[in-house]
Amino acid sequence: MNKPSWTVYRVRGQRLWSQGQQFWKSQTPRDQRLLLGCAALLGGLLVWLLLIQPPLKTLDYWQAETPKLRSQAQVLELLLRDVAAPAAGQNLEQTLRQSLHVSGLEGHYQLQPPDASRPDVWLLSFEAAPADAVVGWLLGNPRQFSLEVVEARLQRAGAAELDDTAGTLSGTVRMDQAPGAKEAS
Image 1 (tube, rainbow, N blue to C red):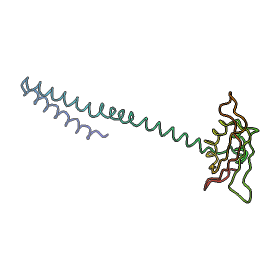
Image 2: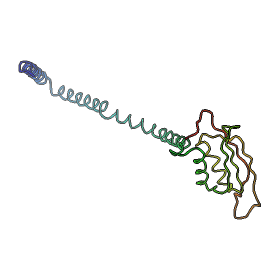
Image 3: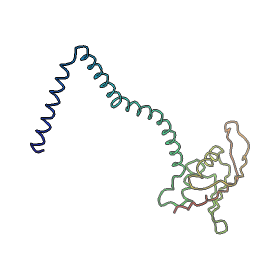
């Protein structure tokens, strides 16, 4: 800043200060107390409006919004888990087989990939497979691979045992490639 402009502001400030002092001295003690009370009230109001109320509103907003965001995050996490892509370097058949093995169905299934006559149809045959593992796999895993269970013909295999309440299943499941989905390669 240059000196002339600084001195202009300093002179104005001194003039306003002296006018304020003259005004204050001209007031009676009762008026001075009233003015001090009004100034304190105005200061408190400004502190409330500028420093306290906005953070309180923000806290109220986020307390209402946080549960919504948490539920949306859970739904999004489930959706993302359902859409998980097969690992790089594996084709869809390898990934399906790996998923079936992890579900405890190893040795109980036969997977037939699509052929030229039915390019989007996967056939999955179960033989004496644990029912809880089959149902668990069918409820969640085909969607991960963009497959839709179109037809499931399953029946209880063998005699029911007392210690195995779920039993075993045998049969065939037909899954179609979901529209617009491409096989991972």
